[in-house]
Image 1 (cartoon, helix red, strand yellow):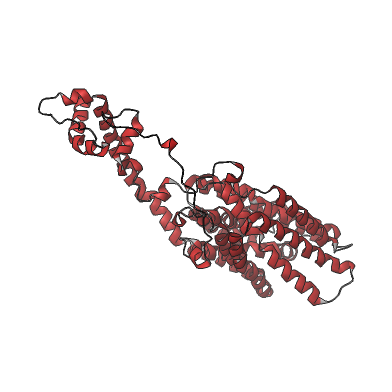
Image 2: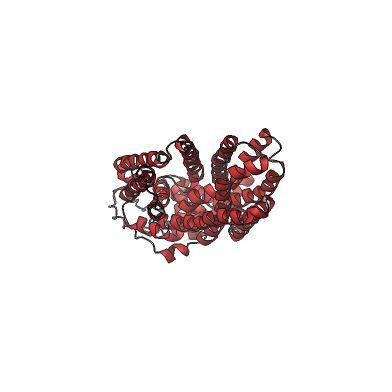
Length: 464
């Protein structure tokens, strides 16, 4: 995954993703053909699966980079939350397709999905558009004003001349206006691909990567061990257990959409993940104790646990990865999307491999211990985001108060400027105020010279 992200920055995403899908379909079909070719050599299946896993790592970094190129930060959470539901839908469809031939000709359980992904790879090659600019669409805004200027200082405070010019078409005598629309555009510099270490230095990448390790550990433990747990503890039949296990993915769809919507509204990706992880811990404990008390309780608890467990997982692998891949520290370089996504999801894949393994080692000692392990992983995932959550909280509290005071100050200054421009001839005739505007003075010079008197004049007019 880490290497695939680096290649994804340096190759056209359309070719990279399409080629990976077609080759992945080939290896998936080869695995199933082992049944029809009557192959009973273990190394054949091991080699095919290893090659298939390597090829499939091209997928996630490429698709997140493509979607991230199209949608800006303000609406990315909800859109990617809805888009990310394809992972849960794929899990459900994969289970249904595999179950259709598992008892008759299990090779078709691999050949059919292989054909599907290969066909979709061909469609992707012909119709995928990597960047909005390729079809004459406006690129999205990847940074907010708060990101570009975290101190809460607006353009109008930095440059008073901008405030006056934005208030209306008025101008001082002798001041010429420049038509910027006719100025030639400078050619945009082609962004360079970021290095692996450079991506690690982006603020938040390490924290979210480690958080995803534990969040994905919990998610994949449920994915692989939930049917067996339902059979052994809840004492449902095999078919009922398989059907109930899909409800965890249904909850994951709802949780991903909900997490994206809330994070867009609040602007706190880490805080949203942390809150859901905190609530997930007691819900897992509760499901272990009451989930086997009936089909209705089991359905409700599985949907709730799926939403709380997969919600942060979905948010981190989509919107958070896209946000960090277009971080303001990159100065407009969008060539970090694939690498950052690969680092975050690759680290999470370590947890995806460890979770089912640990569950297999712990389950003989009792299922309660498995759930204690999952709860501990959720708590660790939450703690790893503590620094980012504190930073987001400070961004909500501190700059908010400073911004309010700054807005009041700027509003009064801009009102004074409007009063000056609208009463310019009257002011120049007042006794004791003989300052005349010199030809060629800039607006900033006039502002500096006139502001004390203009604000006094404005305040006096408001008294009456």
